[in-house]
Length: 229
Ligand code: ADE
Picture 1 (tube, rainbow, N blue to C red):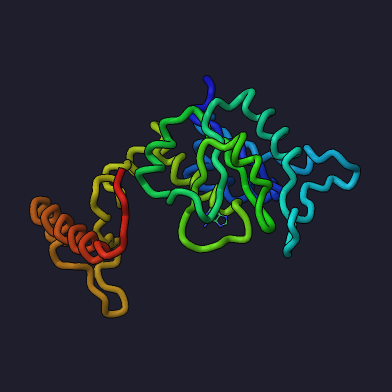
Picture 2: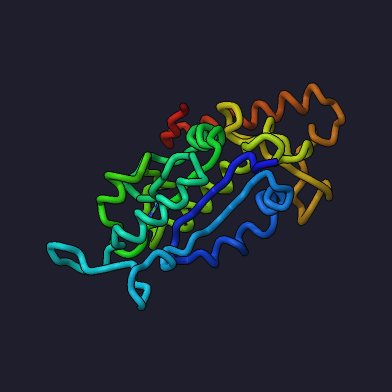
């Protein structure tokens, strides 16, 4: 059976993806063949003996720019077996949120292109990218962490990835509300008690308490813009 979704990442640091996804929900989904992740070393597509993938910017200025040829060739090769959108990770891209995660989880795959240095040659964006995505209003030193965030958030929405006990229904953001606080044993720890209602065994009251708590969190966060799709 083919994987439900495949992620192809183009990066100068392919080795950092394996360890991050070796454990946990995504690691298990990969072991079960539901999710496939390939990190492609951009340097493999370099043309010269030094495997150089960057060069000085036209017009001058500090830093280096990722050259177009290796990126074009890597993306084109990947497109032959991944029909999903090509996404550039860039701080000015559209904001990644749960709505976008849901949308992307419906794709057969994603091609995630990680920028580095001062940026990537703009012709890659013009000719190869379907969209540009940012994980937040801050500048990372490269797109790799952003790609990992997207892989994690999208994978767990793929049907079958989460087990029953981790079901999506109670997720923060699953509906339009944030999750409620959770507690486990012991009932008292360092003088901090679990709310009495949770020990009551009264499921109706517990449900009402949880809804009210979720509502409170949601309202407390209402100042922060969270566009819903
Ligand atoms: N690359 C650098 N900063 C980024 C951000 N905030 N989101 C996505 N990619 C980035």
